[in-house]
Structures are given as structure tokens and as C-alpha cells.
Image 1 (cartoon, rainbow, N blue to C red):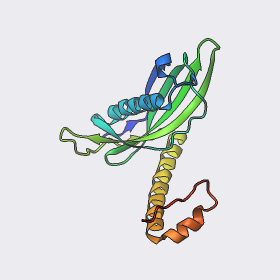
Image 2 (cartoon, rainbow, N blue to C red; image 1 turned 90 degrees about the vertical axis):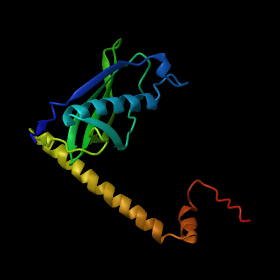
Image 3 (cartoon, helix red, strand yellow; image 1 turned 120 degrees about the horizontal axis):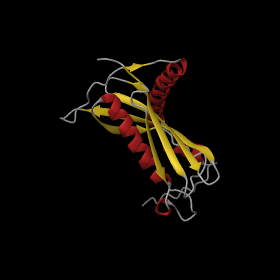
Amino acid sequence: MTPKTTDSSKTTITELMIPAYSNLGGKIHGGVLLSLMDKVAYACATKHAGNYCVTASVETVDFLHPVEVGDLVSMTARVNYVGRSSLVIGIMVMAENVKEGTSKHTNTSYFTMVAKDENNLPVEVPPLQLSSEEEIITFYQIMFRKKLKSYIKEKIKQNKEENNIDKILKEIESERCKVAINES
């Protein structure tokens, strides 16, 4: 299978933020932005894979700045990492206030997509050709994120198996919660 560059599947979607997308505070709903991010991740992954792709997971989405009604939001997606059938798509979201001529970076996120064949089974994707030092570092950082995610999953499983209710109650007593177990 011939490797593909990150530029070969780079995808940008731009959309005007309209009042119907806003919450009661006049800011754009995070869910609207997540939906658009999912669309651009799908388009980018499908271009690279040459097959239908589905969203497997979304890594942390931190909203750095609010998006306003009237902003032009551009989401740029590119393949940052590929496994056998999975692709990690990095998405950068920028909001542009065209009246003021300003732009702001509102969020960055990583979507893991899986390529599927006509029988809905995972299918191999082309390797990723890394053409710059930045692309190599980003690929490596995704590898690190994957290892960290596996480590955290294992630790959570281990913690769940080791904990008992008395230990948990001791741990959470300084947290902002009230324990009210109805023992009947």
C-alpha cells in the first residue's frame, strides 16, 4: 500500500455561526462545534483511507475561547497518525470575526476514526508519509498519547478491583459531595 502525505487528505470546513446555533448566553453551543468537528474528521479520514470511516473516540476537547454568533468558524483536519485500520485526525478550530478582522484559536482535538469495508469490517489504511520534523514529532506524540491512554485504562481497572467502600469514603470525604446511602 502506498503511503499518503498529511497534505493529501487535509480538509477544511468553514461555516458561518448563526443564531440558531447559540445558547441562551449568545455563544455557540459546544455540541454544534463537536458535530462540525466530527464532519471534518470524517471527510479527512475518508480521503486518506479511501473507505467509509466511523468515529471511534474523541480525545479531550477544551474550549479555549467562546465562539460568537456571526463568527466564521474554520476547522482544519489532517491525519496525524495511522494504525492498521485506525487514523488519528488532528483538528484545529479557528473563529474569525469578519467585522473586526480578528481570529482566535478556539480549540484543538483529536478524533480516532476507523476505516470500514463494504461489510462494515475494519479495513487496512494506507501508511502515513511523514515529510517534516513537525509531522514526525506529532506522529510520535500521538503514539505517546495512545500508550498513556492504555496505561490509564489499566490503572482504572486495577483501582476498581482494589477499592472497597471504606477506602473510597475516606478518599472522597474532602470532596464537594454528600454521601446519603439509603440502607434498607
